[in-house]
Image 1 (cartoon, one colour):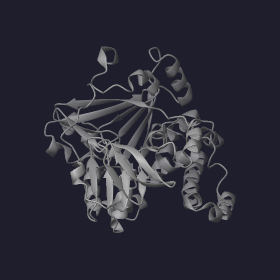
Image 2 (cartoon, one colour):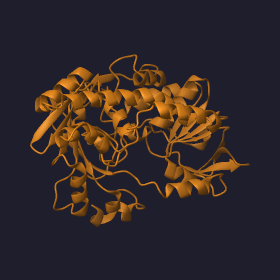
Image 3 (cartoon, rainbow, N blue to C red):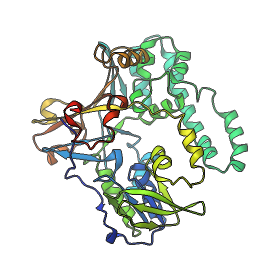
Image 4 (tube, helix red, strand yellow):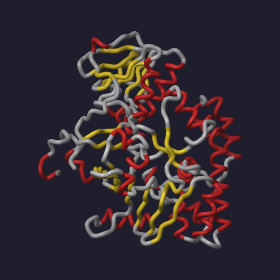
Length: 429
């Protein structure tokens, strides 16, 4: 399939200058989940917030698109911690959607890790998770128990680490010292180094790190703290939004609107306005200036400091210099498949497949990057959204969908980066 065209799944109100209803307490640039969450939380506090999204639909990587009678998500393959009302993630989603967003569980065997001809399942619940791994790797009981202990230690250390990051330097200094002494020393070590301190069994290490596509870096290059947060996030299983990924934005936007705010699509912000060293508003592509005492960018650090802020903005040079040391993580190719049959008839699972040629992830990735036409794909992720969403069969009767994700380095496509999608020529196709 070629690139998806704008679809019928459009969330948000199309921007027109005459539709603005200021003054606003805050402007949010970008309607990804961070921008929408921020806007909804501020609305709950009585603040009038306007969100500007340049895409045809709101939601960022949480949006869905509809094409030829099928629907696919673009990033919400599964979410953890949605099975109990007391979890922080569930409470937050309930807060920003007024409890309107509903979730369906995946299979208890939520992730299946394939290593060549062998596969091992990740099973929901700490005890079931341990039991499955211990059955698959006899003799590694101590390593598996210690691994789960490490996940708990990371979770316990996180509140102090987060507070230390957000407090002003004067207040954060003493706290950071206390947290630093209490935090385990493995927090910021590479994931592979930590796992290899627990076991020499490379297949067990590969299974434990089998979700590395979720953070875009293989275990030798990722921080254990990130690995641990992702692994623990899914420890009680995976969940999928009923009605598809676009339900996230659909249920958040009414909360933004409760205090008079709005989420506009086709709303292209060209520049953040700076006066006397302070952000005071934005200039739109049509020349309209919208002002507010608070401007929040959810457009990404490269877009914000590279494009949106004028050269006169405080600290812009500092951040641009810092960003020269930042490398982007792995990009991906996505294949969207539509089938003229139901997920039930086809027996499509509510389990995600992570498929690897073998346990040495870094070697597989290196060989692929050197000779992509001659080596196995180092990571293939397969998801079955029509099986995960219990409403799919009612919304798209007689249809089913599959999504496949694999590495696709940006460099392969860089020469077309500035050309309009759908008009990049035969060589691109």
